[in-house]
Image 1 (tube, rainbow over the protein chains, first blue to last red):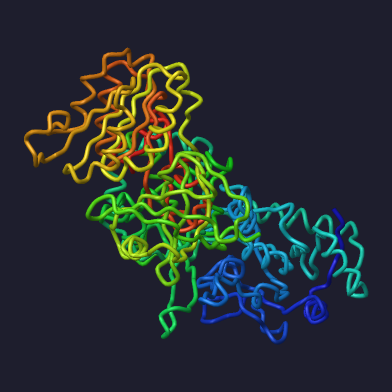
Image 2 (tube, rainbow over the protein chains, first blue to last red):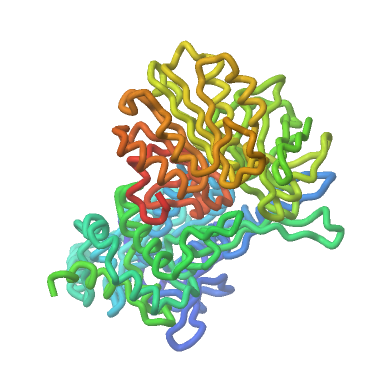
Length: 342
Length: 274
């Protein structure tokens, strides 16, 4: 993989020079500790100290509310063309979130491809940025603290510079376009990178063990822990909204006043919502909260493994930080393992 | 191609099956390629009402036409059942897997249907009766709440008359005492009438999950392998293409991995009533 060096003092000049590749988006400070990915007018607006945005980058590819079609008697169902082809540069995506995008690529690909998702994916340049974990990060446990692909460029902090990994030919074009800003890496850079890497590995405060978790979960399928969690959970769905890999959606038709034309929208859904598994005739396959939260955990940590060979959790810690009922995935998984051995 | 973009289907014929169930025979308005296998389903929809999955109740295309039998259960089904010949509805599909008819060849075939669950079994009943030489004995065990709910009753009676197939029916509440061939009680009671070795049989069942549970458990007690019992599952679906998440049972999507599952695979999941 091609690697070059970008001095930190040149970062903004570099980002400003990307205009021809698309609109620049990055994490912007919203409150003391709240950050959100959004479009910026100038690179200076980007908060480089952002560890965790409120919503993950999935919001760019599968929108919270998305118009799938407009329909009318004359034209039938028409997919909107605009809004799918805006070119963007997504700067400051951490490894866990890049893994999140890679997981969504798997889900929305396959036999049937989600055209909306992949149209937006094709038009997004991903510039990754490394990070230092806080007390909620457990991406090292989920194997998502580092990524070898899923980005066009990836910047790692090596002191006064960034070591820049070039992941795609488009990333290479970007480097060539702004080549005067880049330098070759030298021995001190290599040492700095390895030092930083070791420091980062040693900074994780949280560890969970995923190796045989699917089996543990099968063993604990009837555990009373699920009912206890159900008693705590508010079914608000926040954990799903902030999750980089929660992809479920609901579809709703919105009629215009003529009662004939309208739009077919899809919007983020959560398996924690009460009507998620409700079928015609009124039967709800997961009527109580305990069964719904169990389903969420099983899908992330068990079902996804069976389907795609890895859990769909990327260890970003968002669900822990955001849960209004203070349910922590790390605590739940730790408890599941220890139960019976207390 | 956008798999979520519906095509247009034309209602060719509508038959009222009972007070709340209609069979709609459709054809694709664009006449483009379309084919399906018994057991699969389409997402049918109307603008403003959304879409929902419906199994085929016809065996195969006839002059490009196929049939869905739909019970009025909510706003979409009520609106679809109000359509008339010439009306348009939206369609995506076919999706899902098929009844494993190949696996049934050379064996006895036991078909157990309950209520609207009889509709997705109709194509295999028709297929089995038309190809009787490929199977051992044929049993069609159908249950419903009332006599009126026994879908395709006359059709099945006509098709089985003087043939090898054994048609047995049961209703929760009998209305006419003189009906000797329609019993009162549960469809599982009809399983006692089977006089072939369940080990040499294959079962297809569709109906309420509780019914399928008792059918499967009884058949297993009678000696049938759980992997020789196939159940057709119903779940909420928004996309039909394994993306929206609603139909998941464990690691499986009913829309993509089903709707037909070997009982042995699906009974482990507690989100079912199996």
